[in-house]
Length: 464
Image (cartoon, rainbow, N blue to C red; front, side, top):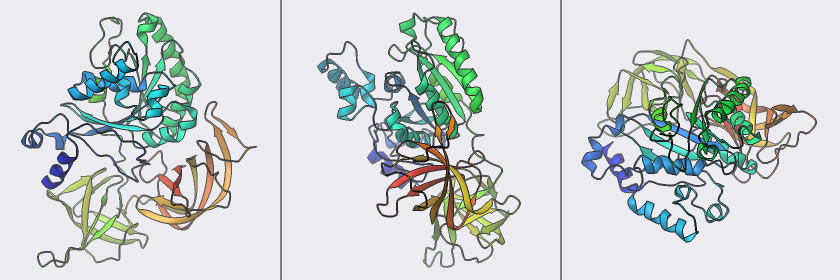
């Protein structure tokens, strides 16, 4: 473990920005964490950092709602950027003739983004406070970059929806809220931004809150919070605003630090997709056979009776191993190695589950899919489907309808599904998948489709 810490320490003395490193439902983890808050390895090792929980959140909103500025303000006011980074964006702001230090430049790193003053690609930023670690996905607001928002939001615990106080709830607000709901993000924080431009009026905030609450009720948003902010001036972002004494709720950073995410994982249905069979083949561990992977749901304990799918053989857990030693129990989303009391033929793509809570075994599945490719979805088209650690071939049997994500209406008279569009489709796979509904488990309820010819990810789907 300490070698991994040292490797990451060498990588990231600086806070990193990530672009075009797609992560759909945890299938491709490309996050490279920086540790800019620590100056010495010993300080990092003794800081308790490894024991802190990680919160992933995404920002969404219309163009010019201030998403990148908000993230820049969070990083700056929480002292998560270096002085030379601040000096660089200050110099860049002066060069561009701007009257203030444009904190949005911390995330808008592409030349086209800076020229147009918009966010195009997803930028991942890391920062930490003494209470929690964070990974931020700054996503675009343009409708033509819907797929980028899906990319950034697919693994988020929290969605921050920004609303311009001058404009109120608009079509883009509804579109982004629908996508957040579709992706099953359990917590939504609505930041009514640019309150300084409406003279910090409580009536404006209350009207937006009332309108948004009525709209979000139709989508079943479970945990909804509202904060009036000015990202430009820092009001209620990290520090409490002195200009909005009427607001008695938490600041954004305090809410991010304290919001409870422990119950977001499904801890009832035990799911362990096998990623790798571990056979050291050494004198010390001559007979060792372990099954490595990340727990996708539930709790596993030493001695539990489990079933191995697809052969449905029953056995017991012999041990739960990690680099730090053996555990008596492990739960989602921990990465562990399981050893079993009986020798069973197990390979990558198989799933170890509790015998009393089996997943569905299906070859026909309905999914809501966000199409990510320029080439349209093909009815009867053949694709590679990836589900947890399993990879199978599939065919598109039916395109049932598209979704107008502005009005939420089902479109049945137009079934050409193109880039950034969302549709409900039926797939047939070449072998059974062991699934849960996406609303029950985001890990075992999600799939991605890959073009067999180009090996490009073309669709991200949620199992209904």
